[in-house]
Amino acid sequence: NAGVMQNPRHLVRRRGQEARLRCSPMKGHSHVYWYRQLPEEGLKFMVYLQKENIIDESGMPKERFSAEFPKEGPSILRIQQVVRGDSAAYFCASSPRDRGMVAGSYNEQFFGPGTRLTVL
Amino acid sequence: GNSVTQMEGPVTLSEEAFLTINCTYTATGYPSLFWYVQYPGEGLQLLLKATKADDKGSNKGFEATYRKETTSFHLEKGSVQVSDSAVYFCALSDLYNFNKFYFGSGTKLNVKP
Image 1: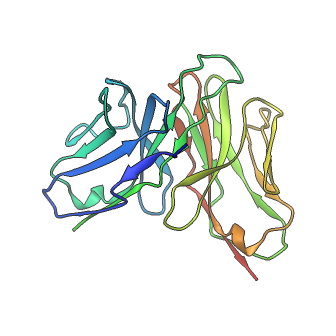
Image 2: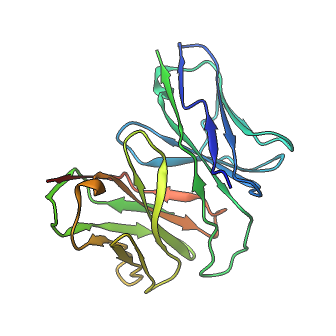
């Protein structure tokens, strides 16, 4: 069973261009999370999606960033008009299903290798 | 709200030394706690986890105990190896907040031969 796949692994863009990052979750996983890791920092939550739905986008910048997880195909994180401050590693994680709010339960998240975005 | 604080690095140890990386958290609800490891240029790998108070997670000689009374989840290893050199992240998953993860800032460990 292949793990979470992300592509491209490295992406270079000039200021003002668009960046599209793709994430294919593990087989059978219907929950996708995107995180951003700035240099020398921990990962910060951006958005949580299920198939065709954005569940929580509280960590997404208000402008230029969008995410989708269509019925077919990978999840896409799109950054329009990139700026140097967008340079970071973007990680995707997938989870199998919602086990409900039961104490002691959790949904393990499996992380992809990340896409390292460099904005020139 | 939810947050994780872990000791700043880098931590430099000699091979076979004892390792402790401190991690404390604040959380609402019933968090699960995790340690992830990141090798250079790679993604995060789950090292160990604990889902409720007093649980001990362990893997590859690493251990951490979920201490609710001190809101801590310190990572320990009795004898580190050069191959343990990496960045270690403490994290919590909030069951009541879509299970999203909250990460500490990471602690870089350098182990010298």
